[in-house]
Amino acid sequence: MGEGVLTSGLRRRAGELVCDEIPLTTIADVVGTPTYVYSAASVRAAYARLAAALEGTPTHIHFAMKANSNLALLQVVRECGAGVDVVSAGELHRARLAGFPGAQIVFAGVGKTRLDLEYALDADVQCVNVESEEELELLSEVASARGAVAPVSLRINPGVLNVTAGHAYIATGEEGSKFGIPIGRGLAAAQRAASLPGIALVGLDMHIGSQIAEVAAFADAQQRLRGLLNAVRDSGIDTVRIIDVGGGFPVAYSDFEPVADLEGFARVLRDTFGDAGVELIVEPGRFLVAEAGVLLTRVLYRKASGSKHFMIVDAGMNDLLRPSHYEAHHEIEAVLPTMAPLQTVDVVGPVCETGDFLALDRAMPDVGTGTLLAVRNAGAYGYVMSSTYNSRPRAAEVLVDGDRWGVVTVRETFDDLVRNEHLNPDWRST
Ligand code: LLP
Image 1 (cartoon, rainbow, N blue to C red):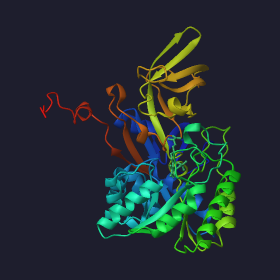
Image 2: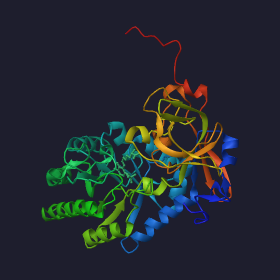
Image 3: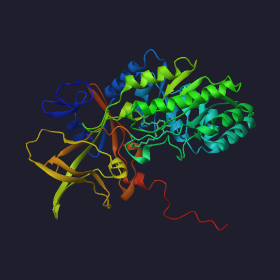
Image 4: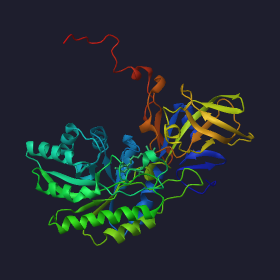
């Protein structure tokens, strides 16, 4: 990112990485490392970009909070005007704490429990995105038992092959995936929904995967969903008024990756559903928050082994799983300017796994012990996927807003690690 190009978010000021107006060194000195830092301004800017692209095609933006469920960050997203997409009762709990009303919440998820469905009804959510015909039957039973009517959107698997998803683990819209109701069963499921007590069929929904760079993949999937909407209406069901086309807008993690074609997406959405007489919803996760976040980590040691050079840092796969899990690329930069010569290194964490790395064979300035590094684009699927593996307390989270900053998640303590454990079990004999 060029110096001085942006006035908010992560940038270099006099050579030093700052987040909005705050030097990252200040945060690391006070809070320690590893620490996630998020720029509120950057979240707002991403939201504004998407909203601008969708102008003229009125569309609700529901943040897929699985990407980042920090309460303070959720509040920033809510203040932008977004709703939220939740996938568990736990996420619903967080969404309510962050101030989202039920009417701004869609409840998705492939394996909702009876309890999840009860929470969804208690919260009066905008709709439950039902992912299987058996879930539909259960929801009918749960809603009927309490004399309620559940607003239902059927999650349809359109059966498209998303060749552009960065990794097989984040493609969800092809035949044979566990997500949604196969489109071939869509009409039958809609008819069943229309006939069941306790169910109001209000929508159709899909999400074909993440990092979708090809607008053609969205177009293909949306045309299939439009075909289903027409078939449902032709069969005499006229209650469908919500079409949710999911998330998946890409973020460029390196200069070689494509950026989101939001205007192209909006054109497809308008062309496919503009005349359908429905409310449109999109569910971006990564796009709204990835670029807003960095993970701060310090170099602990360097060493060589065979032909390899290692930079051992204090953030591991338990803090940021994406490199290990998806072979995902994250840029890593020294926070302060450095004249150190480039060296090809593996940037690895302290966890006892060979797969514990943040970068492999990366040309990095050969900086020494104590150097503060920033792992870029870590605002999505970072902290939320972290664990305490190797009994490593989870990192702190910090929110920056212009010229102020504050800790929004305190670093876990050793006591936190064992909080739910009993040294002496509460033995039972039956
Ligand atoms: N809607 C549904 C139903 C989803 O399952 C997801 C993501 C989204 C929306 C948001 O997708 P996004 O706009 O963020 O691409 N942990 C992986 C990504 C898993 C995505 C799961 N579902 C990663 O770190 O790349």
